[in-house]
Image 1: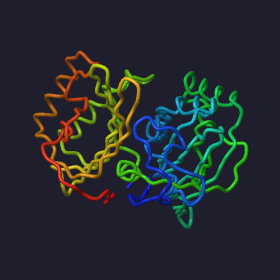
Image 2: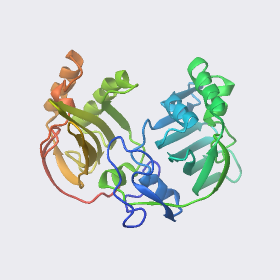
Image 3: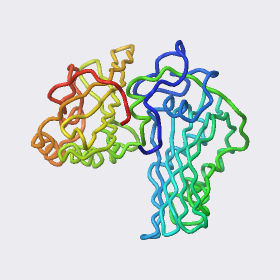
Image 4: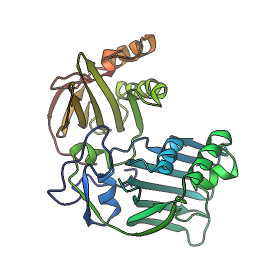
Length: 340
C-alpha cells in the first residue's frame, strides 16, 4: 500500500505511548534505538497538515496541497509531525516519494524518506525502491521557507515553486531541498494502533471537522469521505473531529481501513484527548473491525452537511460522541492493526 509502511511496532518499550490528537514532536518518542524509515514513519503519525504534490503529464500542471502550511512551520521551527508525499507520472515513467519530518523542541528535524521510481524509457528500465535512514537535519534559514510559500501561493506553476517542491527529475530519487546539513540519528517510540494503521499508507481521503486555519476546507473533504463510506470504496481514510459540551470538549483522530474483500467493514482505531476545565486526558483505542452503517445513513449525513449549519457539533453525524461505538458503525469487535 502507498508508502509501504508497516503496521508493526516501532521502537522500544518504555519510550512512552504516542500522544493523541494535537501531539507535538517528541511527545511519543525518544532519541536512540531505531534508525529506519519504517520506524520514523510510524512514530511520525499523525502528521499535522500532511502535504501532497503531484505532476500529471496529461494536464501539464503541478498540484500542491497543504505544503505552504508545512513550510511555514519548518521556517518557524514549530515542533510537530509533518509529511510530504510527491508523485509524478508521464510517458517516461512514474515516481513516488514520501518524506517524514519531526521537528523537535530544539528546532532540528528528524527526517527519513521512501522512494519508488520506475522509468519506462531507459534501457534497461530503471527500477528504484529504497528508503533513507533517519537523519537529524539543520533547516535552512526562515527566509528560504518564506520565499517558497510566496512562490507556491502566487505562481504555483512557476520554476521557483517547482524547485521548492522538488518533483521534477530524470527518474531518480528526489531529496528535499530544505536542509543545510544532516547527520545519522535514531529514534524510538511505542506507537498506538491508530499510528500503526495510518502508517500503512498516506490516506486516500483526509477529512476534518475541526477549528484551525484550514477549517473551511474540512467539510468538503468530509463529504468526500462520507461518499466513499456510503459507496463502500476501499481505501485508507483519516478523520479528525471534535466534540464540544459545557465545560469540556474533546478531539479525536480516527483511521479507517476499508478493503474490497470486506466492503461492509473497516479496521479502525483512534487517538484523542478529553479536555476538562483545567486539564486534558489523552487516550488511544485499540483496533476494531467495525460494521459500517447502511448507505442511507451516510447519505443522510451528507444531506445534513450540505444543508448546514456547520460548527459546534453540527451536523451531529460528523462529530464523535462519548460512546463506545463511533456513530458511523453499528457494531465492532477486536482486531489486529494489519495493513493487508
